[in-house]
Length: 200
Image (cartoon, rainbow, N blue to C red; front, side):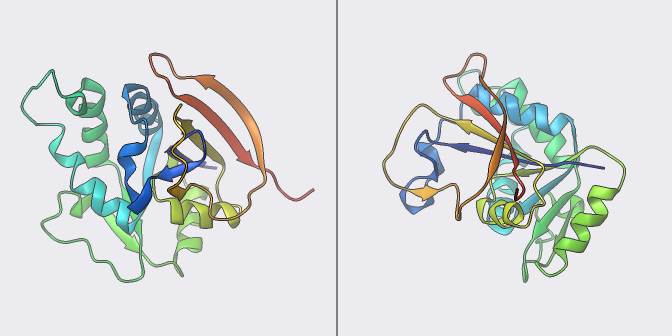
């Protein structure tokens, strides 16, 4: 049975993004990148909402082969490996109307499923062979999956800053069971891992 793992960075006061959806308020440092690469190494599928797919597919494909620039942390060895793995891994995009453009670099490794189709698709994916199914960002999607009891583990990379207002990570109450918490080496972030806690 394959696990569905959600990975998101949040602020210490629980925001997924700043006002207007700005993700640059998050502490997306090298420790966060290394954690996501570890997840990608153990994954066989990435699951994304449409907005996250469009954002990531406009950025990550160019990282692997960009000219060397030691001053640019986005072009680190960790991110270059992440970019190559992201390019090749099968991706499922959840949308009721989106079509992946033919000139999108991830066109051939992505498929779109509707919200109505998703439960059956995920059931088949989880029952199949392979590594984990990983969700990056896509907060609307993973909140819905959490409410439906489909998420197996929630990895929250918690930054040290409180921003006071923004887009909350959780869209509804959730019952969670802590699995562990630890500082990320070389980072000011802390990794908090949870599993859904089913009704008692």
